[in-house]
Length: 226
Image (cartoon, rainbow, N blue to C red):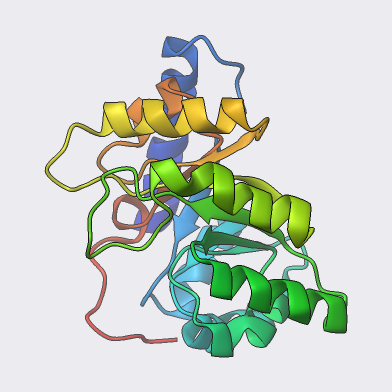
């Protein structure tokens, strides 16, 4: 058994335990394997171990790495979990099944325009900057209502949920709880929150998707190797 396969078994067991601890049904939380900077061979090992949902941070890297993988494994679900530039919108809509990082009006408008042109309509999540960190992307909590109105009522975007990345030095539970409450208020069922260090807490607080990279693939290389 490869280390990636063993790591996946461990993470899945921990997810199941966290679901039970949180009073949730088995299978409520899906594992997104974050393959950023890891080679296609590592993704292939994960696929062989039954993993089907993957997260990539960069459109360019995903475009190099995943078309052949998807062609050989049609069940793959690919999610963009890093920032999206407006000049990459067309390629992102073609590549990804879900885009988790919608965070500003200009991007929302570019997505709506390209969706109308191409007919490609992957599911979207709005990234919320729950810690209100100036250096971090995401809609501020106070601006979510207005941004939701723009995305859904005005632009007709297929927004299905919310995503957050808590401040590194904060207790993550309060951020996960805030995101869950905002999702409830807007009738959104998808919550992408929790990473290698805190995914169990996120599951107990309602995460439907947890993004785990290091605990599956090991430390990331410093440069892409697709």
